[in-house]
Length: 206
Image (tube, rainbow, N blue to C red; front, top):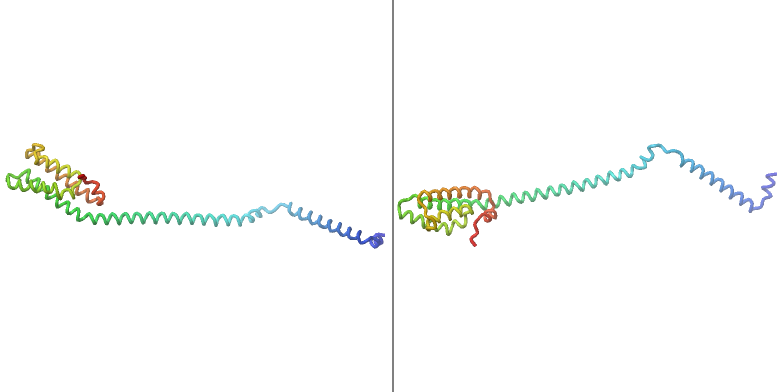
């Protein structure tokens, strides 16, 4: 009877039956896919899925760390070059100061010798010659090499010579010793100075 019914069906009915069967099969497929999707996944599946992300993050962190290290090394190299440049400049300036220090020492000795003769000699001719030398140094060579402390000591001793103050032998010797101390300290300080520092430590006659 069913076979007869199928044979008696029209083409339209057969097409409708085929479409209904197709829809039924698609529904079955969807049910199976949904059932598979709803099944609990193994615990390691999310970890496996995260591996590409973790790998990318590690690579990015490594790159950023490399950039930080590169910049840090560049900064260290730049600082080292600056320090080396400063050391070379200081060495060059100290070399430049060596003949200056020698001139300073010689001129200081001339001025101190003149002051000592003035304070202690009893020979009027020697005193006069030493006085002339002192004033020539005071107004000339000393200006180039003296630091402020020596300049002040020279002024103090000069005050005993130009009647600014009345000085006996004891007072003149006292100021002569003060001049010697100022000169010794000045030479020790100048040995550690650059030329620009030395100029800053001079009395400016302007």
